[in-house]
Length: 116
Image (cartoon, rainbow, N blue to C red; front, side, top):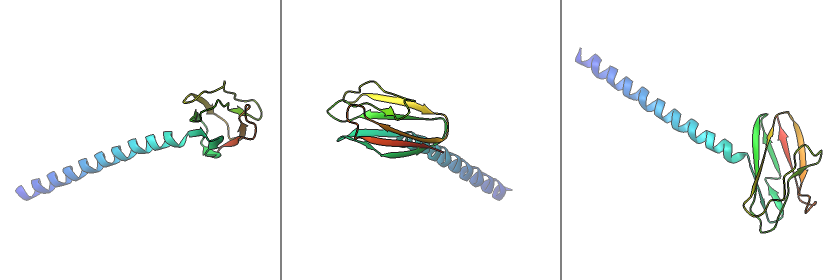
């Protein structure tokens, strides 16, 4: 009888460890997803130049450059104000498609968001 109790306690402990490990893993995956929805503006470029996301994803651009920039879609679906250093702009993509964009201050700066 004592043997069964020890096995049950060991099984319960193992289950608890698995639950904790899975919750830690899903919490870190959520923060990674958020990090992958970021576009950095630096050195007169958008990084990454192409970002693929799912519908319903909010993408945030952060200007890390020392000069002002904008984020403007080719079809004018979204348009930021002029972003100074460390300022951000976010847009939520609801429909699948490819969304090219550029900086209206520096039109050679381009990027695209692919929504699948």
